[in-house]
Length: 477
Image (tube, rainbow, N blue to C red; front, side, top):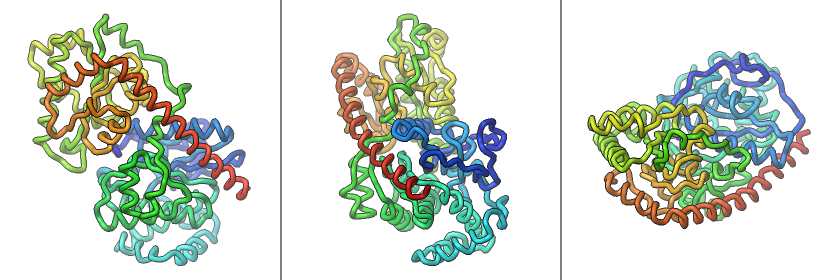
């Protein structure tokens, strides 16, 4: 999950959106349809997380036209601007790779809201085993404990007016971006709060990544155990979840929510072929994997090797008279890799860039999809760059940085185009491209067939989630 911070705009300055207090809680609360909260470690920078939220919203609105959507995320302002009507900060604290962009709790007034909220929440919390001790362990100092309590009170008030809390896809069973006291704890905390306010809490099509510490495993196990519904985006993620909570072995597998994006939401092509001048178009999506300053774990030697190999791929494609489109699905991080790759090119290759390379403006997932509509092949590393390539039916070469990319390519029967970022060579990328050229038609047919199966499975899940939200809304009024 990418957590690179965007510069937020103030939510109360956004026309057409309700005013928010400093805790990120709306001062208005509509009641027309089910009120659904999407929980995601997303701040606007990761376009994969963005397309997941839009896919969920579009599909649930097909079933619940009057549904209202709120976000519990790393950037409330971004969620309001792009996806919903309300937002709330995931946690009170942050870290370099898990930053909150809005809704800092030190500004939240203890006397805001109903006078009984604090006492009611305190009495409820004491009925849940270990919560009080856990809070003391998290924040050894009184000041930080007080801020955590204030955030919990605000979150309780926020959820009390909602009908469903949904952990909405992505690689959320993960400790890498911030450690166990960030997202694993956040999932546990919000699961407890959902129980306390009495609304369904569901975990839908999530992926499991790194969860090795005892603390993370404790939090994630309890977060899964409190869910009213659970599913995972692949079998391997379910196996990891089952190692945390044995009953998860019987849970459903429903592929990544981005795949459920309705065709009506796909933008038209960006018209890249008009500037390619008849050349075949290859899109390349670099990744800032282990780049110092951009990744929690750093490896300068591995990153430099990746840059060199990708430069070699581009140089050969230029020699073969391909038109190259550089794309990305993580704003800020992956863009920083582009000049380093191009800087490795020889003077002769650089001369060809003017006619054979295009670096577009990408600020939203629809920009990326519009570009991919026009390409012949995609070379990608990010999971959701690869997924969006498959959604647009493009033969894709994945240079995998993580097992989740391997699992995706395996599920779609594309392992012949799967390479590993730690040891791939540029010649292997070009050989994989040559294979795709020969077998392009059958590869595309297979991708289309797999996507249709995914859509059918996703539809059943959305029916279940819509029923839960509607039933809860009916009970709560």
